[in-house]
Each structure stands twice: as structure tokens, then as C-alpha cells.
Length: 217
Image (cartoon, helix red, strand yellow):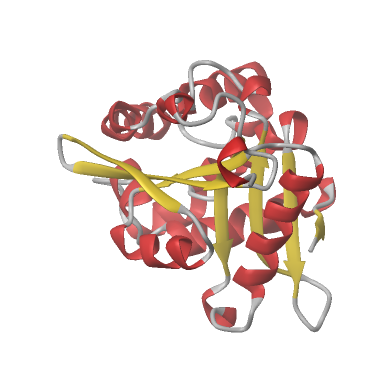
């Protein structure tokens, strides 16, 4: 695992879009948008998040045999992020207009409307009852062709070690995909909350690190 470079942002955005396009969040965001249009403009959506985390957090990648990224994991200290959660990423994009200038305005308006149900199910504070200052994983994906290759383990183990080395007491994340939960449990996360709002359910997970009081003898 290594830190991503700025010149890899476009490739990483395309990689993450390809991994998540069939998942709940992007299916909602691109509801009513034809597949060709979605694939043309879609990478801008994870790209906004990655740009945000390039400035406020960490973007790590795992390389394949040819030296190009086959997976990425994005995280940060929540205290460095906007209190508006996913909306904060949109505000960041609006302040950095070049990220959105290629997306037609009607499509951008549609994506914004479509994103509201996802924003409604998401909480930026759920973990505080368990740990006030954890490390937060915002994006995580591995190229479909390399799943089962050990890339996911390299990224998750790597970012957990990074958080531990920085002194964080825990790592937290959320997923809208129930099928992802067993993998995170395998890596030592605990399913702390399951929250449903409308058509979406968010699974909220936490992994305590050695610095947390609950992990000390």
C-alpha cells in the first residue's frame, strides 16, 4: 500500500465508479440516468470525494503487477472533515468548480436530487457514543478482476496500521451493502448500528485499536 499521487486522481475515480456503479448508493444517485451518460460523467462523483480527501485526509492505493492501482482506500480524521457530511463534499466541489464544469447542469441537478435519500440515511455522528475521535474510512474498493488477490487485505490492514500508528483509538466506516458486512467482521470490526431511512439501510461498523481503553488489560 502506498499514498496515491495527484496525477492518478482521474484513474482512481474511474476505478471507484466502476466498482460502485452497481451498488446501492450510485444506483440511487444515477436513478433515471441512462447507462451511457452515467458512465461518461459518473467518475466525477467518487472523484469529488477523492479530491476532498486528498486535501483533508488520506488516499492510499494498492498496485498490481504492472505498477498501476488495482484498489484504493480513502480516509481521514473526522475532525478535519465538514460537519455537513456528504453535503460537505458537494460544497467543496462547488468551491472548486472545475470538478463539476463538465457535468451538464440538468444532470447535476438530477444527481443532487437523487442523492438526498442517501444523505438522509447517513449520520456524521453515530460513532461518538463509542469513540469520540476515531479514524474514518470513507471509500474502499478493489478492481473486480483482482478481488480475492489479497488487495483488499493489503488496503484494510494497511489503513488500520496507519490509524494505529497515528494514535487513533478506533476505525469506523459505514456501508449500504449488507453483503459487505461479513468481510468487515472478518477484519475485526463490530457491527454497532443498523439504521434504516426510507429505502436505504446503513450498516455502521467500528474496530477498536490497541490504544482504546476497552483493548487494554
